[in-house]
Length: 287
Ligand code: CP
Image (cartoon, rainbow, N blue to C red; front, side, top):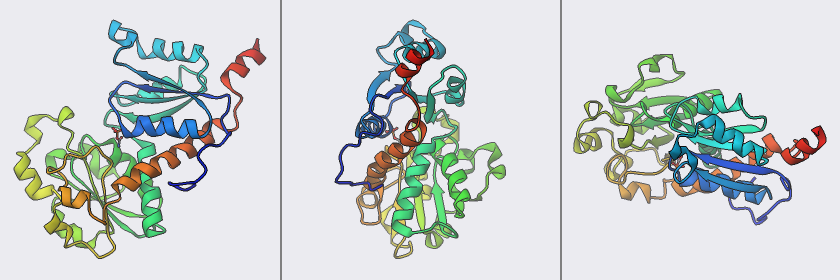
């Protein structure tokens, strides 16, 4: 499936309903799941916790059961609590897709990242991929480490010791504190957002110190291999983890990642919902 296909709409999920259930803010993931579902002709219901009965104390379970009663075949959920999609899957009959849960996982981001790397670099077996920054709070990092390791890549995490999870030594990757040493050997450098909203000030050096040691600026980028690429899942803190001249450079795949996100999410929705009966049809056939 191409990120820029000339085919704008397929009838594959006609009659299916996808609910986007977002308890945390999102631009890329929410909009690309909506675009993906619509390109497959599904009906889409967008639910945002802000402005809903969640503000009156309604629980995740009651919210989900309410949406299911309205005929949801699939629920795409983003939630601040790690494990929320797993809990949800035990309460509803439709398919549940994790669109980012707390500091745990963001699997469709990893799929679109791997797809982007493969389009640029070919097979990832033996490729050296460096993930840099706030690993502690990054669900993107965790999902990428697991997927890229499965695809045969050699993953190295680079971060200050205070921004690495305690259990990182059980992850299938190497760890370094020295970006300048790792950079010239990397085929891919994936910069992570500094997640100020989840940050304990004690974990974080000053912005200036962080950028000096762990930020990717033009001078550092010039030391990368000729065909190496720079990635970022977005949203970016320009001038903190990544300089504008890097984000906007020819090495950057940041805009491609967004375009590929629609294709990757179309594939996920197709695999989960493509063969199923629509929920409303199920209700009718079971009555
Ligand atoms: N990469 C990503 O998850 O971005 P959003 O928070 O904008 O969805």
